[in-house]
Amino acid sequence: MNAYMPYVLCTVLFCIGIYAILSKKNIIKIILGVVIAEYAVNLFLVLVAYKAGGRAAIFSETEVIYPESMVDPLPHALVLTSIVIGLATTAFLIALAIRLYGKYGTFDVTRMRELRG
Amino acid sequence: MISENIIPLFVAIPLAGAFLTVLFKRIKGIPDTLGVMASAGAFALSILFVLKMEIGQRIIYNVGNWGGFQEVLGKIVGIQLVVDGLTTFMLVTVNLIAFLVAVYSISYMTRYTEKWQFYSLFLLMLAGMNGVLITGDMFNLFVFVEIASLASYALVAFGTEKRELEASFKYAVMGGIASLLILLGVIFLYSNTGTLNMGNMAKILDSSEEPVLIYLVFGLFLAGFGLKAAIIPFHAWLPDAHPSAPAPISAMLSGVLIKALGVYTLVRVFYCVFGFPEQVSSIFMTLGALSMIIAVLLALKQWDMKRLLAYHSISQIGYIILGFGIGSHLGIMGGLLHLFNHSVFKSLLFLNAGSLEYATGTRNLKEMGGLTKQMPVTSWTTLSASMSISGVPPFAGFWSKLIIILACIERGLWFYAIIAVLASILTLASFMKVTRYAFLGDIRKKLRNVVEVPVPMRIVMIILAIMCIFGGVLLLPGVRQGFLDQAVEVLSGVRGV
Image (cartoon, rainbow over all chains, first blue to last red; front, side):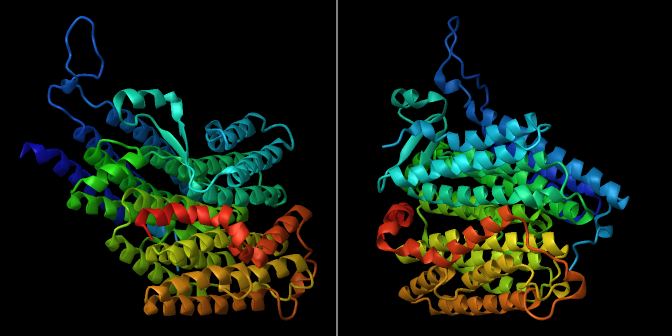
């Protein structure tokens, strides 16, 4: 049961994010949906790399650390990069939302109909 | 022989250009000069690679000098940048169009304020695209895809009018989801193979048997990169996003961005990492045929010239995907040639639309008419690009479409061949509409004072038009060996055809 928990948790989070993107009418809520889906993926990356009782991948002179007990450091580096990229995307989306609010005076996407048809 | 130390310059030159543009934005003329020089530099380097590369050669650069660890650990750590035949082919295509677009923008972008922002985002996008092409590392691919995408979201919103902002929001949300799917795919692949290097990954996947997970990754990558390439079920953002950008950027987006970020990545991942299994081949062909026919039907009823062109981009991407989906030597060659031709004529058409907008102030075909006398260069270049995209012999587009159709027939896929021909005829019909409404007929009263666009814009359009007319030259034996055959070699070697 426990082994499947990360998968279940991340799938649920991801689906919540996609649901928000697809069904919400408020731009801010859509952006939150994108953020939630993004966090689900980042969380998944960290949880997949989790190792019970794992240690940082650094050798020490004072104690003996076996390579088998070390955690793979690469996914952590990847998730940092991915978070930074996510930050850029979110900042851009919010900047767009502010400009859209300035043009339309509302956050409601159903009222923005320039591109319909 | 060429040194591997040149490879990072493809990313470094545009990136440095983008940075310096921001730094020296106050000095008049600097953004233009830097924009043109950086893209010209990258283009010159890509030509150097075409001339100096031997057939079947792969040049590898180890980022951060991690190469030494490989011998100790016995596996590749760190990021590798790889240049092979396919990469050089794509590099030439991307940097050629980028250079011409940068020259065109000198005059065109005077309509907008804050030119330096345009050039720095443009160069950032170019850096991202070049990075996608040269990287040999899965996660690095994702990072470069994101860099190029973010720059393009911002460029779509460049006009900051209602339309542009709305299109950009739609594009950014869809693109964000696509990136997440790609990242998920990369995570699954890493957890399965324990490496991020594409070459290593291919070897490990080849020897291991784990079909279920691999099918999941297929689905994720197909949806993720398919969204970036705007193949038909994932195309909804493109007809909004591409017309909303300024014309030079529409030319870049339709001409090369969807190919570098979508088609190239799809092909690279599915051919070089997964070894192109049968199921993927049939999915590619089905999606290609669907894109071709549906998008061209949607294009027929459009009156906004740029929107019409955007729908045609989807349709032509269908041809390319169909060619790669067939997977035979001929199919791959047709796909690659059509990729090159499409980036030439589609960027020319978007630049033409930009010139029309620049001169007349409208994009609606119903409000134009009789512009041949006033704008001879725009009119003739549009005509040659239209002929090329509709596949009229002896224009460039004819040869690539012919090869794709022949590849269909060679494999006995008559149904796809017929769809390809039909889509081509419908393309011709919709471009006859463009020519008829924009250039022929009587001149409208308010368009009497229209004059031809400035010289740099004219020169760029003429160069691209010449390439449209003589694009078939690429198929001649001497020319083909250095350029096209190398790229075909990389892909067809995978399947052993």
